[in-house]
Length: 53
Image 1 (cartoon, rainbow, N blue to C red):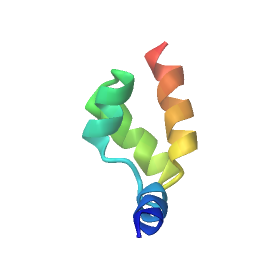
Image 2: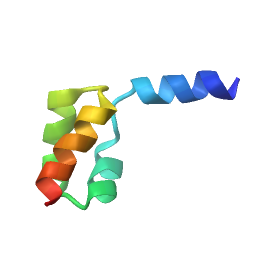
Image 3: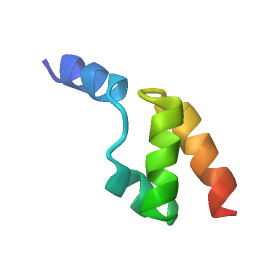
């Protein structure tokens, strides 16, 4: 059952607040990243790391 929950969580896009806090970026940047990359968390993290540098 836990495996199902984990799989579903990875398919959902990030919450903008979580992404912004995780990478220490602005909410506006986090929202733009989520709009661009949707549910692709790996791509969202990569984009956020580029901004955070």
